[in-house]
Image 1: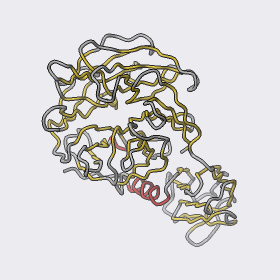
Image 2 (image 1 turned 90 degrees about the vertical axis):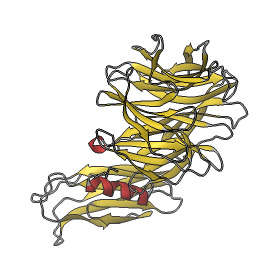
Image 3 (image 1 turned 30 degrees about the vertical axis):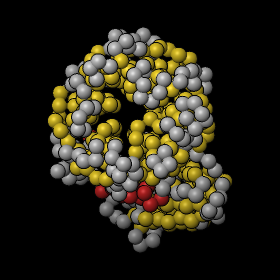
Image 4 (image 1 turned 30 degrees about the horizontal axis):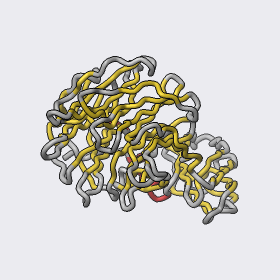
Length: 421
C-alpha cells in the first residue's frame, strides 16, 4: 500500500476548498523585507457559496507575514487564515461586494499599500442547456473535446441502451450551437459502445471504443486516429480480448487505461502504451471489491495518478485510488456517492471537477472532488432523468462545457450544458 505525500500547501488548499465549497485563487506576493506592493483583485463566486483566495509563499522571507482588513465587506463576511482570505456572501445576496486590506508583520507593522478585493456574486452557475442531437431512437454515452478550433461531440446511436446495433456518431460545431454530422462509425460484427475522445502527444484526434460481437459474445477494444477530425483511419484492435479499455488518458507521452474484465467475475487491470496501440500491463489485477468496472484517470501534482472507479454493486460507492510512478502500488478509499459513467478533469484554479450519474434519484450531476477528505460535493444537478449520464467535460475560456445524454424529455437525446464554476 502506497502512502501519498502531497505538499502541505496543496493539502491546505484542498481542505479549504471543502470547507468553503466553491472557488479559490492563488496569488503570489513579494518578499516582505521590502515594501509589499499589493494589486487590486477581482473575483466572482456563486450565490450562497464562498470564494477562497490564497497568497502563496513564493520567495517569502522567514519574517511572519499576514494581512489586515481595513474596510470590511457590506454584504458578507471575511476570515483570514495566515495568508489566505475566505469570503462568504450573505444568504441569497447577488451583486458586488468589496473589502480592502494591507499586509502586516507579526508585530502589526503595515508593509504594503492598501488594496481592494472586488467580488461579484452571481445568481446561477448554469448558463444554458440545449439539446444538440436527437436523430436516433437512443442517443447516449457522450464525450466532448475541442480540436482545430472546433467542438467535437461523440456518442453512440442504437435502438436501446443495450441493443446490439450500436454505431458511433461524431458531430462538430464551430460555435457550440450549430452542429452537423462528421462521420458515422458502424460495424457489421457487433455493437460499438461508449466512445471516448482524446488528443495524442503528436496532435492527432483519437477515438477509443469497444465492440461487442454477437457470435460468440466477446468484447474487443478499438481505436481510430485522425489528423483533422474529418478523415479517419480504419479501426485497430487494442488490448486483450474481453478486457475493456474503457477510457484512455495520455500523460508525459504515455497512454494509460484501466481495463476491466467484461465477462465472468469483474477485475481491473492497469495498462500503459507508448503509441496508443500496443498495451502492456502495469498491474495485472487490482484487489477491489464491489464489482468494479469503469475507471477514469487524472494526473495531479508530482505525477500522482488518481483513479475514480465505479462499482456496480447496489450498496457500493465509488472508490478513489492513488498511486505514484511507476503506478504499481495503489491506495483506495471509499467516497460518499455511488456513481456511473464518470468523467474527471482539473480546472486552472486546481479544483477537480467530476461529472457522473448519481443515484436515488438517478441524475447527471457536476461535483467537486476533494481528494484529501475523500468526498464528492454535488454543486449542480443538470436537467436529467430516466436513462441518463455519461458526460464529457471540457473547460474553455472560463466555462465548463458538458455533453451528456438524458431521457427526461421523453426521447433519449444528447445535451450540451455551459456552466460557470
